[in-house]
Image 1 (tube, rainbow, N blue to C red):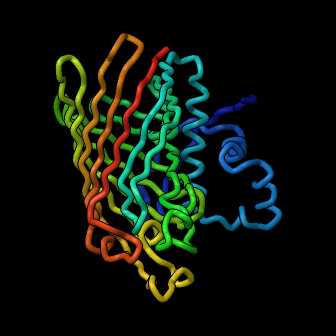
Image 2: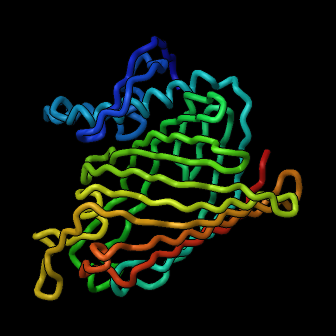
Image 3: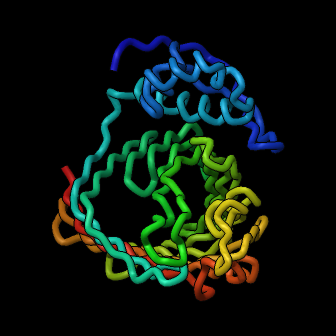
Length: 304
């Protein structure tokens, strides 16, 4: 990993035109090392030569910096004991895109969790920098898989959407035993569409025969550029059968159920079912079918 030096800095996070607040975090001695891990050292050099790196929007650089800071802080706690689990996960979803059939895949899963650092294929990389009683705060880099490919259906021909990464701040507040409120705010990191989001939810932890069941309900807000990227049709992508369309900003309510069942002290089954409700502005898009989106994750984990 190399040698890192630390100093304390004030970080002010800005998402497009939103300023959240300033807080203290240990700063990695070389911010470039963290950024290199995300987009590659050679690309950074090329960006500097093209003068693109210097013209990156300040708010975007701030978001990258914050997540880099958190990764560095997590590295500084390498001596902290954490739990590693590996396994397999089945992911299935009824695609919301026109003439795209049910999608499913099986992929290996890896999770690491300690008091401050969490790594997982769904959570991304998250560093908890505040744990004060009922309030917990963390910052994260979250991978987002491409929503669709051009060859998924004839209705999407000539349209391309890529995988991207989000940077996010997460806040959790324990209202009462087992009942939590969560607020997540973030922005896209990889300069695909420069879109913001926030996610507000309530979750209830219910012991069921000694095993946890988590019920969750919430809503996600997507900025115009994010919604247009996911659900819209650009002018260059419009055809005689597919009109240009921009849904603008949207609000998507959702509910989910999470269940974990322990088979042995080291082995557990997990399941997640999530249903999102698409607003009219999304449903009216020429590339969208239906008004709900359902996804399921089933898996088996072994913990060391």
